[in-house]
Image (cartoon, rainbow, N blue to C red; front, side, top):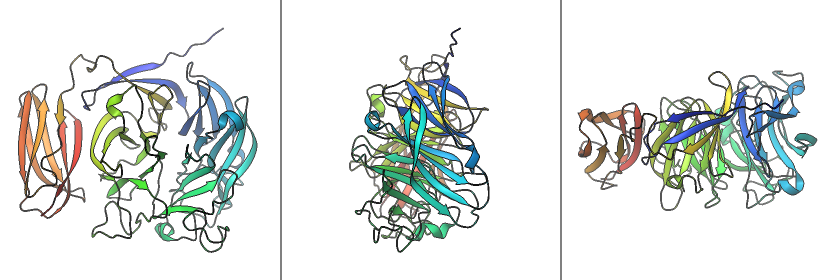
Length: 465
């Protein structure tokens, strides 16, 4: 007897470029999913389940195809450890390679004898075979169990190099040491050797001198990075401690400042690479990150999309002309506890719910062809970039309403503190303009946030005196 799993459909009404989205759930009932990847040449997806292993699912029926590999006999999945990252080799059709990041211990969940491993499997009939360790890093002592990172990706333009993000294991000093891999972005060859053109390569032995695998450092804990299909740059999401989450463009050999800086360095320190964009406290725990480049949703083309775990929001971020900074950020979707986002070959966005409500699920995000919300009403507001920007000391902010609405617009400084409330009340439909006089405020970067009916847009502006 054939079994069919109908995808669950629901509408999400968030203001962004006057667009609305339909969200499907092609795969349901996932137990603690962490990361996923598409299997080329098929309608299948491979998913890491933090507390057990790796499984393959059919995107058409939602059914499980196979247990690709079961790690439970030697797995440490306590706290933020477990089976975390997965990626598929760009040359999968010829070599059948799939890579998995996990935390090993023997016996399972032991506080000692831990190892961070990236293992390469050869896929055969949806099963993992011939495990080979690309990274096998012993973890000394008994770390706290958080900040293990876990995302791995391969640059399409250089398919022999694997990148791996490892957190600083909740020991902030690790991030500034070139003698260990913690708080770093690593780069290794997919055969386990170390590229000699890595920025801190000295003797090829990670345990003596520099850890030759380091590509960049000064990171706290990343659970998302991607390579742009537009300019091939590496973009990363970064979890802060208490004041700022970040998104960064990762450059070879650069220091990203942790623990000296969280968010923008204040005062500015040229030794540290500044973030492209930040999220203030209460921190959302940013996770999945991608650059959209597809025909299905052209209004998102060239945008950096960032998801968060705590709120389930997806943010659309607009680049500057050199694609190394963000000029504005808009919240476009509100789902549940997100970890990873990827663009499918169909041009739709796929996002993984890491285990909320109550089981994990894989979302498929598609454009709503009607362009209106679930109740048939168009989106309610828009917010423009302030002008002039940079400014001194006044700037104008324009916003529009499609119906009578309660509007609140506030200004925040770089610490996330509210410094001004510009609008607070009910306003008629139409275009509106306000002026902010910042004569009494110092030069710096500020953020203005507009809230209408529990929907928000936030943009960045610069005061230069």
